[in-house]
Length: 115
Image (cartoon, rainbow, N blue to C red; front, side):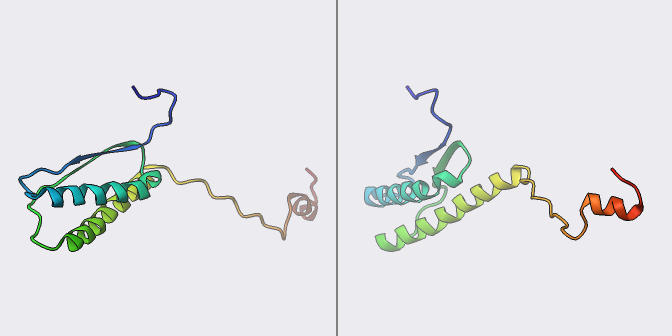
């Protein structure tokens, strides 16, 4: 059972079926690459459950090319997810600029009134 006191974090689920990746070597390589990409981006992602599922048959390419393609695609997905989470949050307030030329006391003295 998970520790209820632990902070919520991003979690990953994978669905890589034989239908779209018939060779176990390919399925395992895809899973390894996705997990590694997720580990690198986990802290930038909002807390939640992320499920990655193949929806088309993988191309017939070398294992190295497949890993490279998978990593590029997953980095793009994680980047979009991180951007979307930042867009949902209200912007952080910016520090207000201080006008050093006129302070409230000097401005009040110029008008002839005192605060």
